[in-house]
Each structure stands twice: as structure tokens, then as C-alpha cells.
Length: 180
Length: 229
Image 1: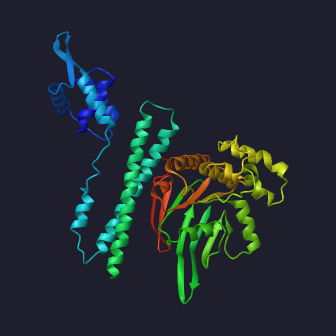
Image 2: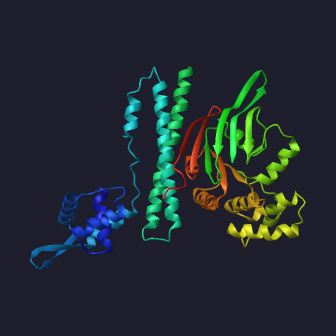
Image 3: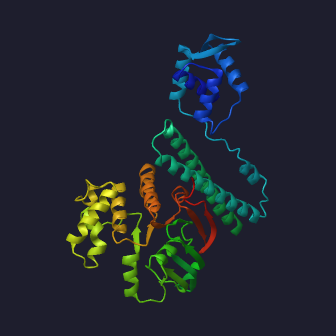
């Protein structure tokens, strides 16, 4: 799971305690991914057992000690390997829309064609909104991580484009099948 | 500022009557960046040609800034096309034997304005397009993105009421395309009305309004406006 690597990546930049780690996680990938504190601490426990991170205890006045986590040499090596490995898994076909397609009435395609058209318009609207967000981002003076945000927005746009193209092909093939 | 009222275009193909555009009513506001989407054969090029005065409707009316584009003589249409409309195309359509600055000057040269009077404006437009160092280059010495920038400068030289773009990045890679769209968007931010036809949803998404044509009619009309904060 990439939560593990996201956390290793954050700790590779700086030693942090759990709370700071959560803030940093939210700042970097929070728009796409939300984690609660429980998940953060469970993952840290696991990383520690695997000797990928370690911690120092910091004593606090009138409060329990807190743990400052840092990445180990082993952790850094594993992160570097992960970063250099391409992602093999193509997005799984488990969209809600695919399920609808499976259960559509093959003898009565009109509602499906209607659904496809609505779905395409929806994706186009999303692309429109996302593109204008990207334009605003590009106009601003460069904030840290602006490039990453822009690249992730691009990924969103390309995925939506692929969905629209695929839906257009569905439309065309369903219509062709109707004529037979 | 551009008004189509039940505009239609049909033509005869052998025994068959083809409706390229059916009864399209559409109002394009000043300062709008309109994207026109649609598959090939949906009528989007016909729509662009009608707005640009390259073709006349067989039915209905079209007005640009209140002036009719329908039922006028070819000479009148040519004048409107030259003065009110700027075009950019997928394959740039620059003249290979002319330099960048000469290509940009061409629309005004055709009007009879002497080159010496046009040149400063043409150079300044090329500079705005980031091509200050390419003024005397010929198209073959320029990259695709640079050629499209020259074409945009040429389209703007006569201060057109509307800039019409036909798949302007159909021949460019994704990164260069994005630069061109950011350029078009910045022109639009300064008030330039733009109408762009494309089949590419990523291109269309730059518009403040997107209409989709299907079988010669408008099937979808969405707008979030460039007002997105």
C-alpha cells in the first residue's frame, strides 16, 4: 500500500512526531486521500516493526512523552526502490458506471445511450472546472509543491479524457449493434 | 455580439439532402471563450465557417456586432471576414516563403496598408507571443508551437471582434498545446472573444462555456465561466 511509502517519503525529508506527520500528509496528498490519526499510528507501528522507521522519546512538561519518528537506512533504501519502480497495475475496472453497463438491458439500449450522454457531460463539466483551477494555479507565483499539484491535476484531466473517449466509443458501438 | 437565429446549412449530395447544421440558435457574448465540441460530421466546422463568414447559411440569420452575415454579397462578406474575424487552424496555414513578421502583416497588406506602417504592430504582437527573437524566421525554421504563435499574431493583427480557432493544437504535443491554451486564455482575460471548435475534451475544457453539437444541433450547453475563482 502506498500509505506506507507516502509516510516514508515524508519522514525522508524531516523527523516528525505523529501529529506533524498527519499535517504534512494532509498538505501533500490530502486532496486525494484522507487518513485519520488511527491509520497514521497503525502504519507507524508497522513501519517500526519492519525496522523502516525508528523513534526518539521526547519528554514533555506535565504531558506524556512523545515519539519523534525518523526514517532508518533500511527505510530509505526501500523508499528509493519503490520510487524507482513503475506502477504495474492499470486502474481497475470497478467504477460504478461499469456495473451499470453490465446490468443494462441489451435489448433496450436507449436508456443506456441516455446515461452515457449524461455521464460524458458530467465528466466534461469536471474537466472544465479542474482546467480552470489549474489555470488559476499556473497564474499564481510559484508555491512549494505547485508543480506536484499541477501534475496531479493533469493526471485527473487525462483520466477523465480517457473516460469520455471510451464512452464515445461505447455509444458508437452500441448504435452500430442496434442497426444489425 | 454573435447571434445565430435558427441558422441552418444544408446541401445536396447526389439524391440526398444533407443537413450539416439544423436550426441552431446561439448567442455568443463579448469576452466569451466558447468551445464547440462534437464528433466529425456533427456540424462544428460548418458552424465555425458560418460565424467566420467563410460560408453562408441556407436558412436563418447570423449577426456579428449587429451586422448581418447572411444574404450579403461576397465582397461584403470578404470585408467582414478580414476586419471582424481572425482565424487560426490546425496546420497553422502560414505562407512558407514569408518571414514571421510578413506572415503576421499579411491581412493588413491585403487591405493595401504599406508594410512600413504595419511592421511595428506586427513585431509588437510577435513579442507578446514570446517570439521577439523569431521575427525574421521563416515557418520552416520554427517549431510547431512557434508557428501557431505566429498564426495567432496574424489572426490578431486587424483587431478582430472574434478569434476563431479550428483544432488549434490538433498537431501539437500536450505540453506545447497547454502553452498555446494558456496564451489563448490570457488573450481572453484581456477581453478577446474566442470561439474554438475541437473534438478534444482537454482542449474544450479551457473554454468558459462549452457547447456540444450532435447531428447538426446543440445537444449540450455547459458553462462554469472563466469566473471560477
